[in-house]
Amino acid sequence: MKAMVGLVIAILIIFIANLFWPSNQASERKLSSKQDNTEQGESTEDATNRDAILSADLNAPSDDEKIKLMTAEYEILEKERKNLKRRLSRLKHDMWGQKFAPETAKKMSEIMLSSHKLIKNPDMLGAFASVKEIQDEIVKIKFAESSIEQVSEFIEENKKGSETVK
Image (cartoon, rainbow, N blue to C red; front, side):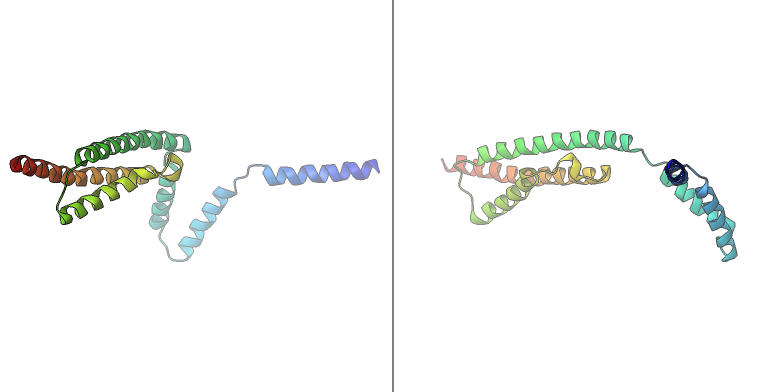
């Protein structure tokens, strides 16, 4: 009985060692794939270029570096959102009590609503997969700020028009 338990434990240890022990199969696979490619008519230069591209992927930033880059970009995004929110609040205050032409009011309403959608339910840091996506969101915020400039011009024109009537 003891011999049987010892044999099972020995087989288990060997199995676990083979399963988790690091091996050089990756280098063997690389060599065999190069040989297969050269046999298929692909030149060694093409294989070398492909290997260079694969190694370039390995030089991509690590997860820690990616997280640091993303948090830095996200802080910029938060500042832009905060500025947009302040600007929208300021324009709402300036618009209070004023009357506009219907077509002007409709344009202003569309611009304000589309800008407000960006800050109403903002994506958190975890919603972005890369720095590029955060930068795209920053571009959207900046575009909203530039379109709000048109609303500001409408308000200024309306103020000037109401002053000349008085």
